[in-house]
Image (cartoon, rainbow, N blue to C red; front, top):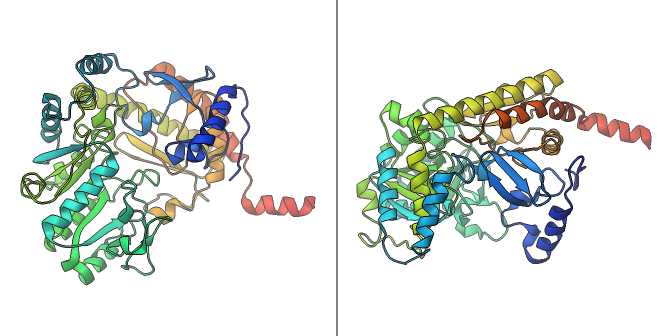
Length: 459
């Protein structure tokens, strides 16, 4: 992957200056790795403001935003009713360290939309999944956790794990800083692979506390569960006395009004034992939650013996932002986002097809992504191994062409694309007009074999 990329057509002087300053005081110059543009090269854009579907960087460049703060901005940036509610909440005080009415109302809204009986508010998705796993272990008295390769559940030590060898073997640390004994109670399986799940439970069923899965995988690109897969997971866990933890930090209140569960569990008549939420439910503020069955949640302190706490959990400003966002997230909002996302997804696929770029566009609810596949023979991506075989170099060229034309895509081929209720005709027109040139830029990237042959001739 190139360490830099051309910055055609747009000034990035102040972004470059701020990035240089940031690198002197912050590892990599960013506070979350994907923001550094390492996967695509070039200068990360430092944003100064946002409104509706638009981002404006410190150099005055305007972009249509297709990441929406990685999902939370369902209504668009700086929604006036959310801003008004937040301003009023902040004027009353930014943190009390006591219970507040806002956190009760937010919890009631989440319980009313989902199959959970009770929720505990926290401050991040990582905290939510970490706490849900601790609760599952405390409730079952078991230690082993199953997860899927390519599903991301925050930077919890035991979940930053890589698959061992074989179909159902224990995990190994996936990053330096995670001791091997932290992952010895984690198993990593291929996503959408029923045989692997069955093998794991056949061998270790009486030791498994829980299986955690993204309700629809969005952290290896958008890889939906195959039909009936989530129900199969719930039934398998139930048959072995384990808990199913459905991670809806990304999909919750984003793909439908009731989250990803609204597309399968609500229709098929089952529910997870525990769920995690984040992003949209915070309305752009640091807020998350985990919840589930009443008997499981009753094991949580102070009612039960499983301890969890947080100084800023249920922060009144964050709770107000989330509550206001959820109340404004009507069926009309989801209908608009779904239609806008479909327009962009289909137009991107059409432009890439016209340019002769092999790809697969996959969607789940209002979320989608485009995989730049190695050949036209690939018609679907169903797990992390298949997602990893895409042409990230072609995506980098596509990304920078779109960026130069004023469209901000995820700076990684392994991320989902997000739109909002604020993406109007003007925003969509800019995206659609940028796609043909971006597709041609991707098509112009030579195959690795061709590039190697050309280099040999030149030498």
